[in-house]
Amino acid sequence: MILFKRLFLPLAAILVNACAQTQDSSINFNDPRVNSLSEQQVRIFSGGHLLTMTDSSAEAMAVQMGKILALGAPDQLSQQYQGAQQINLMGNTLMPGLIETHTHLMLTATQKQWTELGPLAYKSVETMREAFKLITPNEQGRIQGIGWEVGSLELSIKEMDDIYPDNPVLVVQRGHGIWANTKAFEAAGLDRNSIAPEGSQYIKDSDGNLTGYISGQSGVFKMLGGSYPSASVKNTLETAQEAAALGFTTFADIGISNPTDFSTLIKAVESETFPVRVVGALMESYPNLEQSLTQLKNYKTEKLTFLGLKTWMDGATQGGNIDTHLHYRVPSFNKTKGPWRSQESSNALALMALRAGKGFVFHANGEQGLLSGLTAVEYALDQADQLDLNIDNFSRQAIHVSLATDSAFKKMRQLDVQPTFLLGHLYYNGDRYLDELFGDVVHEYAFRLKSAFDAGLKPSMHNDSPVTPTTPFLMMETAISRKTQSGRTLAPQETISIDQALAAYTRNAAIHFDMDDKVGTLEAGKEADFIIIDRNPLTTEVEELSEIQVLTSVMNGRTTYQRQ
Ligand SMILES: [Zn+2]
Image (cartoon, rainbow, N blue to C red; front, side, top):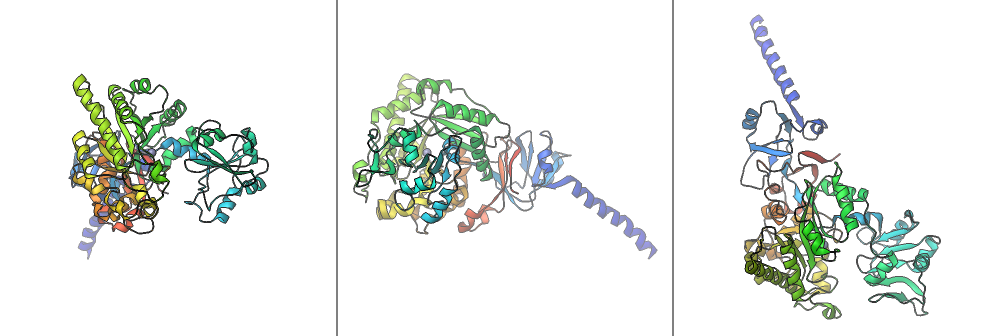
């Protein structure tokens, strides 16, 4: 008995000691102490799944000074980095931070100043009316809303006047129209006798009175006093924080249209708490485009880089103005479809980007628009060959790629043009593609991700916010299930694997932005840009991928989002 006691005591002491040691040296990934560690402190993440997006089967990752130091087995890394802070993933999954290759940070931020009233938020005019009544006037006393579509979710000018007799009311439709009350017309110096600017109409009732609806972009801008109001630094930061909460460590603004937005973006990004890297591109309408592009040739900060010039080959699929050979079911759309510009002007823009030492990214929804964009790239590359121009920084990307033919993918491979698919449309507008716009023929052409992968390309996917809401894990699910919002399948033969869907938001996306030496996979020497998610996508049922929750986002080794 005595002997047992003597033996037992030291053993208990060892056990207690071992416990104390584990408690001291390991903290959970969501412990606030993680954030207070110095940058010099080596941190080793283990105790969960590591999705490196390479062929590595590492189970632990060491991070220091904002960079990934090494990957390997937990014991091996602990041995290698003695005194490292051990961070327990608690069974969760660590993967590279997500990259959105086509979105509009500033335009999304601008819309924060407008109250959402559209069908995404309200299903009936009654609930929408209640929300409308609660809008507080902005600094100029204006009531600003967004999202009424022509049809069920809108109010008459009389209803708007009754609710807000003393404030101008402006509710923009997404894109091409706006509603205004009497005060707003007065503030703009307009009445029932005013002539609308070219390309727009002040819609009137049978007695010639204003209905409150203005159709056409020029009329929208006239009511708004020239253009959409610029986003504030605060709203830009908030939008970036929302992106970080969704798992993004790299976001984008592909279409900066004016110097005011540009300087707001720079100010926002300079803030130490700005949580994502941003890749920008200048819209073709940017003032002094060529000169501005050339000035940006060497612009590069830790968090802000520029891809190049963004232009359009055609319009919006649901707007009826894309460049396609397909027959629209809406008869008037067959009159508005077609290219937005001549081939010569597309060629000239591609060459301008190349000469300025920047990239060329072109919007193409229709399969003919896509071929025009590729022809422009081919022209610029031919010229570069003849004139011996440097093409090192001439990255090229086809944006949206809603409809495509095999020949386009072949040509993209030849010209090294990468496609980014607007998969948000498959989910949110896929039913319209099938019912209202094209019918079953569209299965052959729509969002052909598998064909792009099979052609040897590195496709990525996007939501194009504010066109569709930013929902990366839902997009991964959609790319595999091919399901629309109502559950029908669109072009099911184009389904891809989970590894391909993940690649579209990580390693492929990094290639689109020429950042694959820095981000997109977990590898030693790359930036410590990663996220911790609550389940492993590789073992999650396809229909549950959209439910994956981001628990923590880390950019440059710093926590940018922590789920409460
Ligand atoms: Zn866009």
